[in-house]
Length: 325
Ligand code: TXA
Ligand code: MG
Image (cartoon, rainbow, N blue to C red; front, side, top):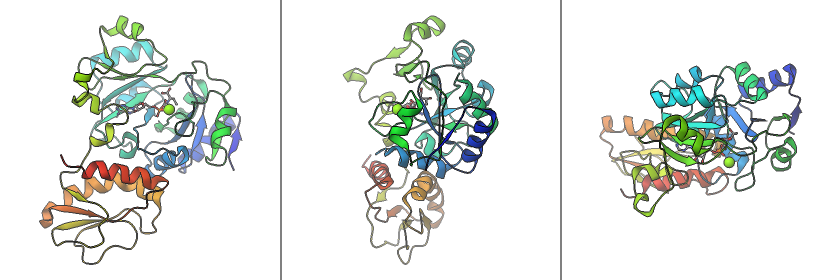
């Protein structure tokens, strides 16, 4: 059952409580409705991919109450500060390097070392962020591959029963997603055109790069763009998928009852719960990578993960991590 909340003090307080306890809440922004989760809670973030039926762990935008809050989690450049002064709050998302202290779940950034941050201008989004006191990870509130929602009715038609609540925030003013600008490399690169025009960005900060030509197709920058992103983070140890036995040199990434004789194990989900496994995935790879060498383990054996629901995204991610490089 999805609760429909009014955009009042009471409704927003209720929505913040649901987010706080790990629930999903759709809310209005000036661009499109967002499907929000507490960005610092990996299980809540995993639920976003499940509710959307997303086949891949695309990185999500983290929404903040203020530029100061956003810049406490990422390294802001002078250009970022200037864009923030000019366009925030508003439909501009900046991709910047994560700080090591950033508490946002790794899954929200799909394991990347950058994070997309934005300050929404809609009063409902602002009040919700202020009330929660934490960033909200939110893609557009549609099922994967469907059209972005710009009214509460659009959201309900796609997500009713799949999310805890929806704040009816009226129709979205911009109706088109935010512009996504990558500032993690120079010159700035336009990853997605959107609510703020390229012309106005260039008027503020000078030339930006956009469009992907064939010669750029193999560049590191292209690998950061949507879809191809997931090959970016791979553990240093080789992965062996669908393991049903374990070799003496291998650490174990377990799903369900673990294989016998493993000397080092990370359990994704003892109960074989795919949402829990998705939430743990990036942490598991980091952890095994850093703990295996001390025990002279040189590879990671991965138990079979059923390739349905979130398992599809998990196997997609593991296959990319296991690919020869
Ligand atoms: O207007 C909007 O941006 C809406 C509202 C809810 O804020 N959100 C939205 O999110 O459109 P979503 O998930 O549908 O699109 C996020 C885009 C994707 O193209 C994703 O690949 C890109 O941002 N993105 C997110 N994090 C990134 C990162 N670290 N590096 C590169 N691209 C990133
Ligand atoms: Mg979208």
